[in-house]
Image 1 (cartoon, rainbow, N blue to C red):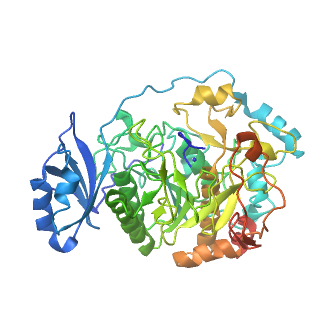
Image 2: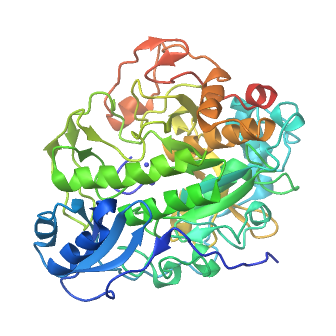
Image 3: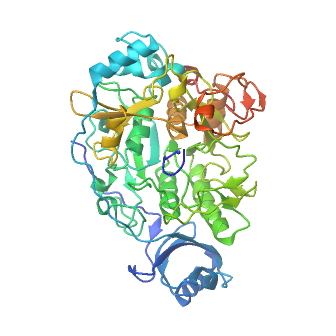
Amino acid sequence: MVNRSRVLGVAVGLCVVASTVLLGGTTRAGSGVQQYIVLVDQNASATADAAIQAAGGDVLSLNKLGIATVASSNANFASAVERSPAIVGAARDGAFAQDRATASSAPAGTHSQASEAMGCAALYSVSLATGPDPLGPCQWDMRAIHATPSGSYAVNKGKGVRVGVMDTGVDLHHGDLISNVDVAASCVFVYPTTPTSLPAEQVTRGSCSNKAALQDYAGHGTHTAGTVAAPINGTGTAGVAPEATIVALKAGTANGFFFTDSVVDALIYAGDQKLDVVSMSFFADPWLFNCHSDKEQNAIVQAISRAASYAQQQGVVLIAAAGNEGIDLNHPVQDEISPDFPPGANVTRQVNNSCVTLPTEIAGVVVVTATGAQNLLAWYSTTGMITDVTAPGGSRFQTPTFNSARGRVLSTYSSTALDLALQASINRLVIDPAGNYYAWLNGTSMAAPHAAGVAALIRAAHPGMPGGAVAAALRRTATKLPCPATHDPGVEFFGAPLQICTGGPGSNSYYGAGLVNALAAARD
């Protein structure tokens, strides 16, 4: 998951989002204007439009699933509009954007590709020739799931499969990634009304023509995309499915926020594109838990669920990170970080099983927990019997000897990430001879794209396989892991709650059906 306050020449074509139509008035930017997600009764759209206007709202867009984005300066807009029987629900989505500066030069302290490979080879007792690419010695994660030259790469590299990475964009200049990115099909869902977004990443709603806005200012999206499908090309790292195609679905801002309208629009677009797999490493802001008993939060649940269901109906396999809160999703008790926007708005509240994390707890979504190099559950990983599989997410406490960086997951990173200097200062930034960046990150955010890459291998071997069957194959081919007798030392170090693993090998709350296995899936 995105880590905020929580432990989460390419031809450019025109790509119009055919599922979205613009209605009603215009955006009224300014003080006091709030953006809303409004669920409309599709059998009474004219009445709904009138109700929105009567409540002081301007409809910015209405998609084919009856989910409208509305701007209003009426502080009581939600309660006013919900009086109409043509309105199913309304929820606040955010305010207007704030600007941030971007990093412009390589920071001091960045490690060279050669020195990093040597350090990893010594740490993990592997040859410098461990590949297939120069940073292969650092990719303990790929070895753990048998994505190696003698493993899945010899059988299936994911050719012909399109994987949507719903994240913060991609570095359009990254030489170890961009050759596998379909820029023409990629699209941005960050708007001038999206909180925390930079002007450079904002687009006109309903159009995919602004490709420059795909540029990743967080680094997170470039990292997850590289884990899925960095090519085997003689530099840097290699992904799980190195011949798959990435379709970037930029729904997250430079500061790592994913608001409801962006998530909804990206899911619908993924369905329209009939993508094979979509990797999702985030929770939909501003609520970690959305409780059905709260009218506003329930509207958010319905909106994102509608969009996810539509994507699944088009055959898209949705894969989500379990979360970095170190809790049992089957027994949530407390939410201390919501709402996480605007800053300082969070309150401590009691939650229960009527409250859900999105998109993780949507029916049919593949849920992925995280392990470290010893195949132990990572200290931060959220768990629960809703877990489908586990995958490498990293933990500095599971290296053969303690190493604060190299127990994480190394993958491609963006040259415009706002935290480049920070990553370099803590020995987690690497640069190859061509100037491409890589970073060591950990989280269930890193686990989900590993599972998405393995799902891509299944789709490559069985192009017509239904989405549910792909998810079943992902579970069936996983390496079974029993509940462990010990746990990640990070639990004590950080004072994290020690969870209790329940279930047996192949079906437990830590690992679900087990650790994803690229070789077994490639052969399945």
